[in-house]
Amino acid sequence: MLELRKITKTFGQTIAVNDVSLSFPPGQMVGIIGRSGAGKSTLLRLINRLATSERGEIVFDNTNIVTLAGRELRQWRARCAMIFQQFNLVNRLDVLTNVLIGRIGTSATLPVMFKYFSAQDRAAAALALDRLDLLPQALQRADTLSGGQQQRVAIARALIQNPSLILADEPIASLDPRNARFVMEALRKINREDKITVICNLHTLDAARAYCDRIVGMAQGKVVFDGPPAQLTSRVIQEIYGGDAESAVDENLTSTMGAIYAPAKPVVSPELADAL
Image (tube, rainbow, N blue to C red; front, side, top):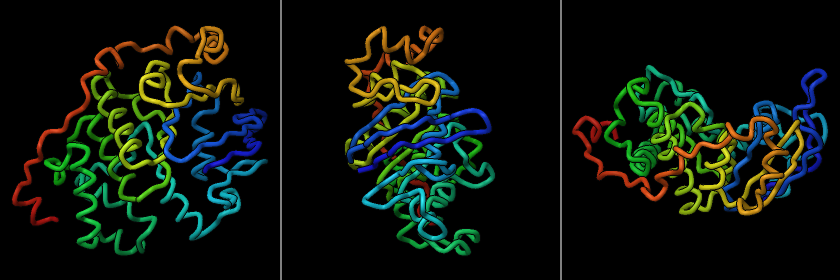
């Protein structure tokens, strides 16, 4: 269970997250929605400890995450995997190595820097890529992939951290509708099959309704809605988005939701077999 207790974060005179208390039971897929500047990204960064709150507690398995430092903080960041809008891949490295970088939180830093990975880690990375229909691209440079493929590489990198939580900060904001569906289907499949809690910041309301069990709406740093998608009324949507309510709807993303992403059977080249 992840619990946020009266969390507050300010930047100068701006209150980015204002006295937020939330609980996330294991295995939920939660969408956090709101206008730009509502505090969504800051909230995820506080959970992952990329930022530190001025007040409040973040508790996971009876541990106050706010107090962690050093090795314990690195272990938490491995357990609480983060996926970013801009993928955060190393473009000049191949896909497989980018995924293996996910082991840096649980392995010694020096071997990772010299790209030394165990056979077990390589097998785990290949399995993660296979689940996301990217095994044939394992030896390609990351910058040769499409945006949607790069985001799925980032998801594979998160997977080999063996996380308890996955935090996704606007993972589809820079993608076209087709690739956005692929990424959201991948996150939902991982949530369902691995029972991993997924907390996902989403700009579009339709994406949150289509893929999430629960929606948290934020406005001006505060939680103004917390409940199932069916309870999102027009009044609540207006409270969350204000004058941006119409732009928060993207029907293209979910219009073909019935076409579930079905990965093709991977073809492993001799070069890839040698790399593994």
